[in-house]
Image (cartoon, rainbow, N blue to C red):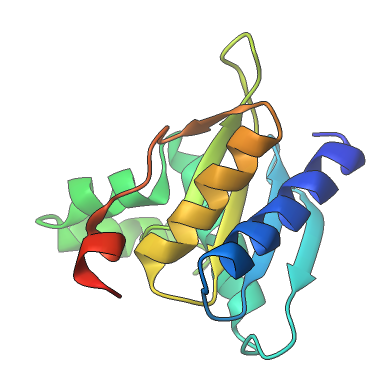
Length: 151
């Protein structure tokens, strides 16, 4: 993931959050090998948010699916979820907000993780940012529950 692309995704995620009134966000963009390329934290975003954002993105890369999909698949498998957390030295955060970034050929080039608001809202900002960068997110659409529930 080129630095310019990662920086653009982080900036677009923060802009998307501001457009819909989200709480202050922290955005982590990782390359396909799990290396942190960009980390941006808005004023007022909590001090743990960076680690959470990285964990969401890292978990998505590690499993090859979005962190929302991980949460949904592991809901009834707490032992496996615990095993993944142990295998990842605690870097695995299985809640929405970790989104894979795919290029035009459908190859994973990295992931973005966001923390700062409710997880579904974090995911919305991540997906929006990846799309604005002209890339494909996984998942391609955010959960709509956060808008309907007024979270």
